[in-house]
Image (cartoon, helix red, strand yellow):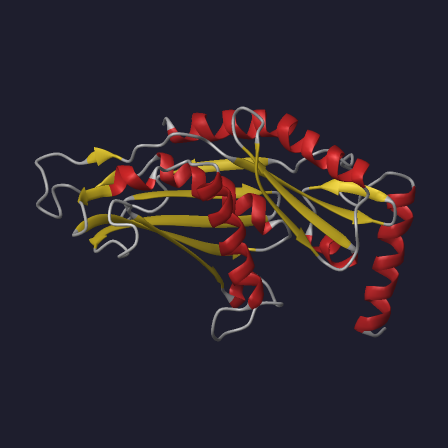
Length: 263
């Protein structure tokens, strides 16, 4: 049996399930997969976390350095977010320069962090115009089974909440200092299969979906960032539904992040 025929059968089956408001793994449309967050996952990083969302597994490491600020923002530190999708994580990932998928993951995570003001860039100033903290957020996908946006956001937020500024290592002080965090953003990603909207899609669901929307909110429920993907569209009511779910599910995600980061 050809791979194309198998793929066609699976696509048809997922559409049939969606019509019945069912999913292959038994979840309801608004249910997330089991979530496990492990803080301090990388001993050599300044902050880190590993997230398992269903079968998707992501590790984020934070490396802190000092550098010069941008000329037009002499009082602001620098945040750099990157994502690596290694071939061992999925047959769909390839060796080579950053793919469009990895660039999109990094941008979506970065936007949610920046627009939520989780970190105030002015807090990262050491000496105006001369030296600032540079926060490098490195996202590594270990296993891929869909929804890298939310898994990566959860891991990045948790890692930042565990980050220590390496004062001793860089001879800037006698004790390391915790990175100052102002907000705890979360995101929810939903896809549309047929006429059904479902959150936290698996890889198979992403493959058959026609539209995707990621909504990042802060602890007050304020919308901080949105990212639309794929070629299909959502109705206004569907967008409002996804926003409501992001606000609702964000409470539980935030509680899980706080619990993991406090250990």
